[in-house]
Length: 387
View 1 (tube, rainbow, N blue to C red):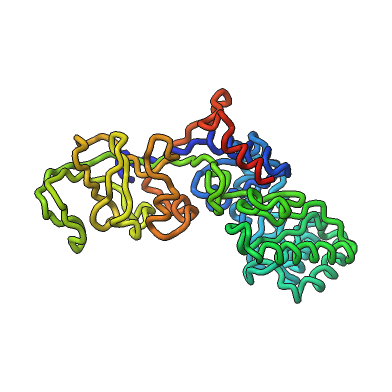
View 2 (cartoon, helix red, strand yellow):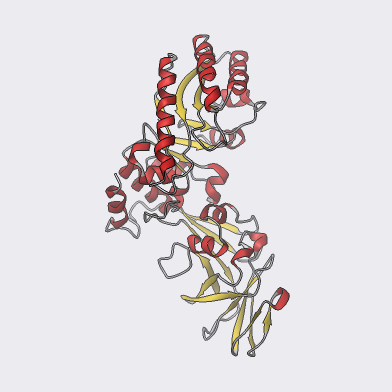
């Protein structure tokens, strides 16, 4: 661990995002806490206290620790191999997504062996050719699901799918894929199934496409300030900073970093910050990124190394030991996660989930008396206008 590199996670920002989304969508919220809550660590208590009704994760391995921590809200796991540890999931009362007939038989068999009925969500692929049952398998899946339900092994409580292009709310695919989902739900009803939660919308659709919300919305990235459609003002919950470990005054024309890909264009001061691609900062942001020192943005120069980056501090009188803010919510003018993603040619999700274990994590607890930076409710009004 680098001495002093720190990721400050503002649980209050997460709570405010949850409340904003619940208020604006008008539907129950499944808070998706996969990948260590998008890199934000323990968040189940925060999101449930703020108004989330469900928790969603990918694997059973992600679900079981939440139960062990005492989370008793409905909990769905939707991405597991056919030979997963279904017995442990059933014992822990985890809802399971069923993406095909082989998974159905495996889950139902485990339920019979345990003597319990397992709650399942039938997962339909509406266009991504990724997870979920293909349209050609859906009718067969309905038939066998009804059979296993009649035998008491399963109870079909949900039908789910995922949109391919919700980051572009006007994309034609959204209309087509929504209709495929509606058709799949109708087929389930004709087969005698009575699911109570139909869920299609993830963050982007939940915020931008009211017609996709149905009975439940699944929001992951939005909890942490990321709107894939880049339309709504949610709060970033991470601030990454580190101490300046050394400074040096250099002459114009000094080469910096591997390959000397940057040369200073004037006499200047260089500051060394002990963070690099080994900590999750994207090397692709070299020559584009910046950090904030003493409240002033200064460019990252030369190639980002595994463990360090160099900042051209210019006229900022930086000294060893003071902190450089790599990114944060942006309220003090510091770079944001979105900017780092743009500089690296990637998405914000990759930045927040890729930060490494050498960085010390600290949480700022929820302060119910703090309304947050949006006390004027400007961003909430924006969300309301999308309804």
